Each structure stands twice: as structure tokens, then as C-alpha cells.
Amino acid sequence: MPKKVLIALAQGCEELEAVTIADILHRANITVVTAGLEKGPVKASHGTTLVPDTTLEEALQHDDYDMVVLPGGLPGADHLGNDARLAAFLKRMADAGRYVTAICAAPRVLAKAGLLDGKKATCYPGFLDKRDFPKVQCTGAPVERDGKIITGRGPGTAMDFALALVEALAGGEVRATVEKALVRP
Image (tube, rainbow, N blue to C red; front, side, top):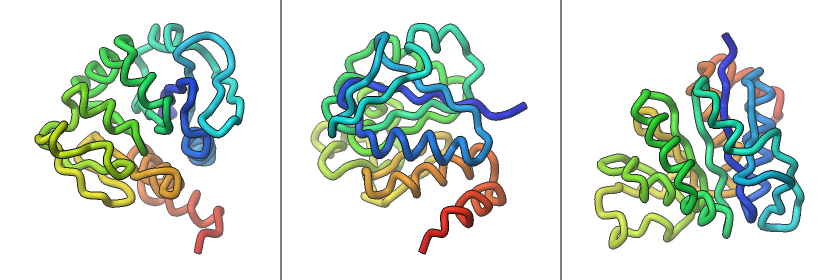
């Protein structure tokens, strides 16, 4: 059975992250469902309009996701962090032993939900400040994996983050195949 990933999209999300992640997952033959917090197009942080596959409300009627991904960007990550439906879903996914992932400013959403307590994580500089989140070990690495939690630093690491997601879901061989076709340096 193919792996299935939910990417939550909020107004003001970082489009480079959202599109890169969806594209790389598709290249690995992973089913991707993009879900907007509300109905309609999403205006990303740098003006690109994204059209989600469905709404978060509709997407959450299914529980067959292997992974949830939160792109960063502002104010997108703030909108994700203020959505009670999403917070409850993240906790259900973590409790079920499924992958919960976030990049850029969005790891802060995971930290606010208590999902990063005692874990290594990374994020856009300053978003997991020790004063606000003393139980999180922020490494500053491009990508950090701690169990079923995977975090990424920012737009410049979106491809590395997406490839780490592929590896987690489909294995190193699939990651290598996808990466080779990208002709990365």
C-alpha cells in the first residue's frame, strides 16, 4: 500500500517549502494530500497562489496518513499554530507512532503542542528559543530527525528536508533514486 502524506497549508505559508516537499514526495510515488485550513486558494508568503487538494476539515475525516508535514513561513506557521483541529491531529499522529514533521518556523507549532519536549529539533533561527522551549534541544542542523519527528531549518534546506521525508517513508534506495534524478551537486 502506498504511503500517504498530509501537507497542511495556511495563508502565508512558505511556498518554496510547500511546493518542494510536495514535488519530491510525488517523485517518490508517495501519495500527497494538500489541505488548506479553510476552503479556497492559499496566498503564500511571497505572493504565489497555491490551490490545495481539499480542506483540513475534509482531510481530517481520514486517519490513513503515514505522515503530516507543516511548511513554515509567516504568518502561515502562526496560523497553523492557532488551529485547534491541527493541534489535536498532530497529537493523534504522534500518539499513533506516525511521522510528524515541520520546517522553518513551523517546528514551533510542534513545540507548542509539547511534541518536541526532550527531542532534538531544528528550525529557522530564533523560532525555538531556549527561554520559550527549554525542553527542546535545538541543533541548528539543516535537517534533524529524532524518532518519528523530523524538522528542517528553512527554505534553503527544503530539498534536503523533503528527501529525508522520502527516506523515512520509502527507504534509502528510493531516496537515492529520487536524488540522482535531481542532478544535485
